[in-house]
Each structure stands twice: as C-alpha cells, then as structure tokens.
Image 1 (tube, one colour):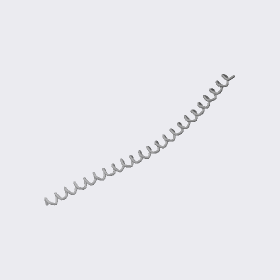
Image 2: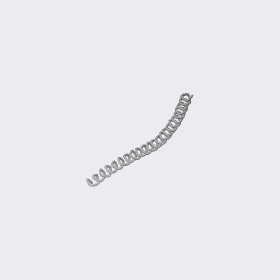
Image 3: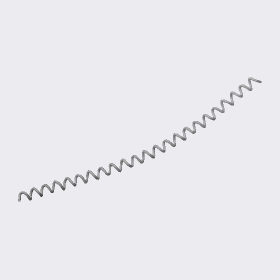
Image 4: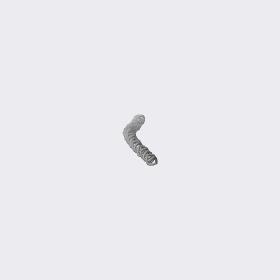
Length: 84
C-alpha cells in the first residue's frame, strides 16, 4: 500500500504542478497580449506624429518655394527699374 500511496502522491504533485504551469502560461500570454496592445497603440501615435511632421515639412517646402519665386520676381523687377 505504501508504494500505491507514494505513486498517488507523486501523481497529485505532478497534476498540481501542471495546473500551476497552465495558470502561469495563461498569465504570461495575457501579459504579452497587453504589452503588444500597449506597444501597438504607442506605435500608432508615433506614426501619426511622423505623418504630421511630414505634412508640416511639405507645407514649409511649398512656402519656401513660393518665397524664392517672390524673391526672384522682386530681383527681376528691381533690375528692370535700374535699367530704366
């Protein structure tokens, strides 16, 4: 009977360890999923910021080109005035 009791005790310990491991794996999975969602949200916000900066750069480039064209026109007009 003592061998039977020992085997039963070992089996119970094994089952308990498996149950604990199952819970640990579930907890790790949940934590990983939450961390993934947090990182994804942060990445989405960063991407929005990047897009905004790119839009700003495009706008500044257009304004710069327009300012250069205006300067060129003014230079041409001044040169014509000087020639008169």
